[in-house]
Image 1 (tube, rainbow, N blue to C red):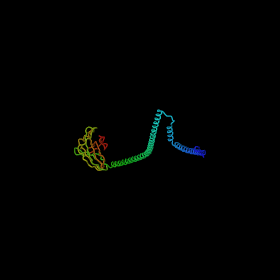
Image 2: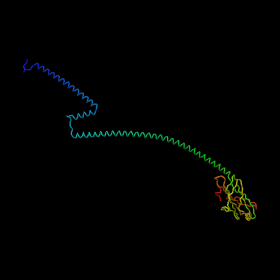
Image 3: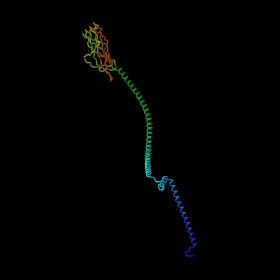
Length: 329
């Protein structure tokens, strides 16, 4: 038993051992807790590191914040800060320009695609137009050939029509020329005396196969006691009217001229330079429609062989038929 003022060595020893064990346990526990905390921190750091490595912006942001919060980094002056700020502004403007460039690129690519589509469409249209032009040329060639063929057929038809028309006209003209009336005044005079004068008659004959319509005639005569008929003689008409008559096919009539006096006949027989002329014309139409009027002009010189005998000779002028009379006299 110990005194109150003395310490119990065994008790102190037990207390010390217990304190040592408790301290050892606390150290062990503290070490274990530190190890666990270290593991957790390391795990968190590893996870953050992996996260930062997997995402580049996070990694960059981590470095920037680490640099910014570092108390030992070197601080820049105002000029350096302004340089950084201007650089950031330039970078931001460049970023905006990059965005505008991307937008313009998209627009240009879209426009380029549309332009290419337009070019492709235009190319297709050009190809179609070329094909159409080729087809059109073929059609034009065929059409031209057909037109040429039709033209040849038309020309042949015209030629055939013209030939047929010409044949018809020839046949019609031949019919008219062979069937029409043909009136002629024959140089076969006859004289009938009535005392001191005599009537001279000339036959008018229709040698055609159809009648002569509206036959009109005029005749005249003149005695030239001392000379021949002048070269500029105009063969004037008589004053009596020319009444129309009808002369049938192959028919003959006689026409009287101015009577010749017996004294004129005596001069003609005794004087060779004396002459007696009879002239005139006969006009008529055919029975065929559309035919022109015909004319027969005549001029005879009478030669008396005796009192009752006379013959006629043709004059040098005023003897013609139809168109021949246009340039006579």
